[in-house]
Amino acid sequence: MKVLGASIALLVTAGALAAVQSPAAAEPQPPKAPTRTGTGGGIATVDPYASQVGQSVLKQGGNAVDAAVAAAAALGVTEPFSAGIGGGGYFVFYNAKTKRVHTIDGRETAPARMRANAFVDPATGKPYPFTPDLVTSGVSVGVPGTPATWDKALRQWGTWSLPRALRPATKLARNGFVVDKTFRQQTIDNRERFKTFTSTRNTFLRINGRNGVPRIGERFRNPNLARTYELLARKGVRELYRGDLAREIARATRFPPRSGLTDLPVPVGRMMRTDLEKYRALNRPPTHSTYRGHDVYGMRPSSSGGTTVAEALNILEQFDLGEMPQAAALHHYLEASALAFADRGRYVGDPAFTSVPLTALLSDAYGAERACALDPEQAATKPVAAGDATPGDGPCPEQAAGRAAPDTENVETTNLTVTDKWGNVVEYTLTIEQTGGSGIVVPGRGFLLNNELTDFSTVYDPADPNRIQPGKRPRSSMSPTIVVKDGRPVLALGSPGGSTIITTVLQTLVNRLDLGMTLPQALAAPRASQRNTADVTAEPAFIEAWQGALAPFGHSLVPAGDAFTSAAEIGAATAIEIGPGGVLTVVAEPTRRGGGSARVVKPN
Ligand code: GLU
Image (cartoon, rainbow, N blue to C red; front, side, top):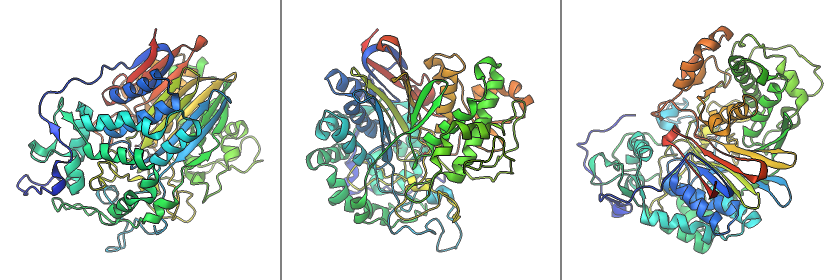
């Protein structure tokens, strides 16, 4: 990104002091540990404050749903560049009473007036460059689904009211939190985008400070967000979908509050207040498949997470990974992932607009059919072709050549895992798409709007299930997953990471269920991601450990990372395992994104 010179005059507006960072040294962050074992409930998030909030809800007798919403609201404060009320997500819930899994699709939705050619620059007739044009734009903002998700989850399964669940996060926004390395780095990575909008600059950049970036150790307050949470507590989420806030959100996408300090193009959107009024978070049945005696539940389309993880597992189930040398098992993991990604590209989109062959994608029979294309000794030439998901092709149909699908998904989001003393489990992934979302803060409201509509295919193809259509939800990769064995939940996990979410969840499941790793080891292990592309993207530690052993199979490993992320990391997962006697192993990342925070109600 182009950074403008410091000579540009500072534009200080009336709201300039909306967010004040105190220079005085603040009390330290709550203590954090990546793994905790114990009983009575537990929570893992990427953030020590959010985990602390979730744990305190559990200790006060709230259930997993109450804790998940309260912790998610806290993440909206401390992880505002990854998630918040300007975004969307997917909520998966295991109900201990009914022993059933339910999900809420809280995905952002395209405005009714979004055109098929929305990603084409009218000035040139050519597609907008993805970066910087599309990512920092009003046109990529979808109608937020997160507030409706919280409301729906609490009404259906919670024991706390929304005002009560929002209280700890409101306090956190008002009193502030201590800036850590990740928050500072994310601000630095987004400085040019944040400077582009007065509202964002006023919220996230120090107006008088050096380079506008908060220092590590200082306290960051967001009083505007505190007031917005209070408004939602007072008036309900109706306010955001029908009230003044709805009008302001829509307006910010059509008339982004430009500062004049940068020359980013910022294509505008066409969202209206009625788009917010029409928005609904949707109850959907989960995806269900089986893997080596486990029931695996995930998210249906509009996310591709549930079907793609399930299909890859169904392919892998044809092979005995546990009996192979680890390099061979990893080869199988990478190849199964590529095959499942080919089908994801061909078949998966918002089910209100495209008919997704769910039965095939989730079935063992189709997994066996796809497994024919997996050569145990040799990596296939990528991209591999999608399979024929219509039933009855016989066991090993002919393979065709595949079509490359550009992957423009960005790689940051946030995820949390919670369980309570009753045995309810929540796996929840929420996002504003890329780190910093669209870059646009709703003026005076303290939260960023998403740029989730960049998850639509950027090149319009009428045969593509993920093409832009008005009122549609762009295809996601979020993969909150709950694993049940003999009718009891035993494992829940999820991760951020754009399309690498799918491979992170898949690789972690393989590590745990096939390769004999403990859950902390399964999460910590170096990651690689094969999304049906010529090269496998991988973390440096994976390349170092496996390059030699995977080369004979024909895999080429390249470092992960993109223009927006400073670290070559894949994912930032959280997970909980429920062992015999209800003993919990609650796990967050030991190092990725600065390390996450696991907490239990009664530590062992
Ligand atoms: N937009 C992504 C998705 O829905 C999530 C964003 C991320 O993880 O970076 O799959």
